[in-house]
Length: 190
Image 1 (cartoon, one colour):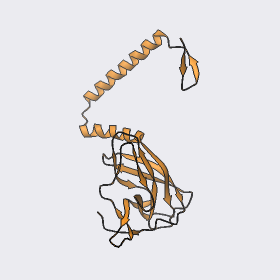
Image 2: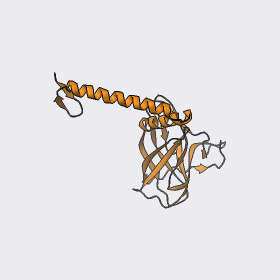
Image 3: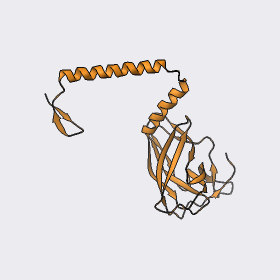
Image 4: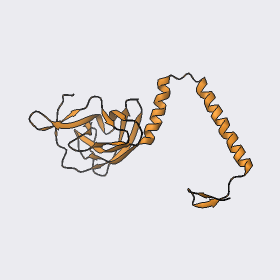
């Protein structure tokens, strides 16, 4: 009997009986060791669930089309799409970057006079299960406050997202020239 190995694109013979038995024995020993280690640890339930959530989140998130608006100082913003392929919504509660003294989660919406105003979003952004959070000029974005040094086109900026379960996710975004995204900033928060 022959099998087709999808990874290598070659035809292979099945493993011998001895190889199969040794493989099963190794898997059983690993499973017993893992079960024994879990039962002997004194970890709190919240610690255990946070670790699992962090691993799942890293595998579930993909950032597409990320970029940061070029700036010589002051404020700028990061944009892109954050895709969540998991079965659960993910709550982004904060962000940080060494490129700025502070990074806030912002939304842009009209004020009472119809002028577009940016303000910090309390509680953060929700990335829906099997959905995407879009960060774009004139809408939700990551606001860089107190830019540390000039961000020039072609530079890369590292951004770390922080989640409600205290796990994090890091991605890089290139700096680009962009004439838009000049909304006013409302220091009030909702």
